[in-house]
Image 1 (cartoon, one colour):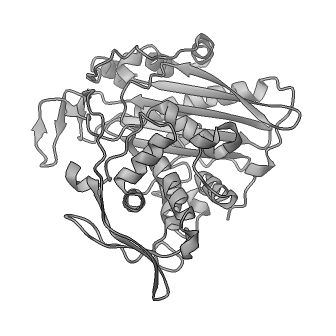
Image 2 (cartoon, rainbow, N blue to C red):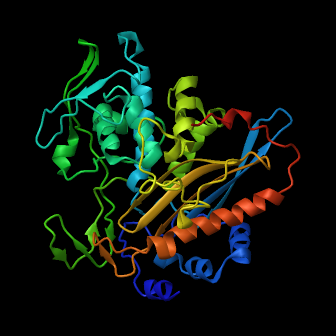
Length: 417
């Protein structure tokens, strides 16, 4: 509790051109549900939305007599204009865009399993011609997507960012209506100009090159008119302490509502207009569902050290705080992110034993000292318990929520090792 009280005196400093309350969405019913079951720790967080910058979206799913789902959303302090660092959640759109792009290359004999060799065409770019985590020792779009969802692998994200190309990636997102989503950075130290340049790539089979992507340069203009400053101080790339907020104005941006909607477009594609969906085949969707829900101990290629990558490593809701192994009758299809004191997760949760399903997304900022890049964040003390507890409250409510028709969830019963 001491950590919570200390954190309250240090709010993150966020300066934007619009007030934080401009687009905020709130549900009094969701607020009362959480407060009625909250521990003292959770109540302290809920009582201080300005300090913790939390946002919550809970989606009830109801089925009709033909098992068709309908959705009802409940929000708490959800505001698409309030900045949070999306961290690894941007790997979701990058993976979806990569699968859409590779799907369009079938006429060249290329698919997501075709070996993908990344070359270098600009400063600080990385050459990748092998992948020891793959069964055949070769990199591919499929292998990168697996690693993105199994353990949120940064290198896999970087390679798919390069495959997509910065301009093509963002134009794809804009065409699908994600106008506030912006992905402009790899997860490696590069300048803004270097991130506009992406690598030449070859798809090969045996010794034959099937398709080549030349180096690309993004000329896309991004809207950086809203200044975003976070914290009171930060450590820069030279390991110098700068006594000023960290500037996130030109970083990636991914509103929580967009994240949840994009996840819904994969899990329930029929619930989203065709123009908002990624063009994926049925097998692509099954592939995504497999690795969104598979646990590190169930993976063979890659094969993970489960002392580091424990089974709830990327499962914030319900389990992350205690590193528990989820029971076999519960599966979580999700994409989390964590960086700079921000934690985020968007999840579709299924309980096959009790025929229960729901979606939940949330984020929180936990940085008591107000210093960024010092790796001193209250993830374990405050952040992960926040996700575990709100997930548990919603889950327990869902177990007792009356349903006219029980859901048939067979399409989400997948085979794991």
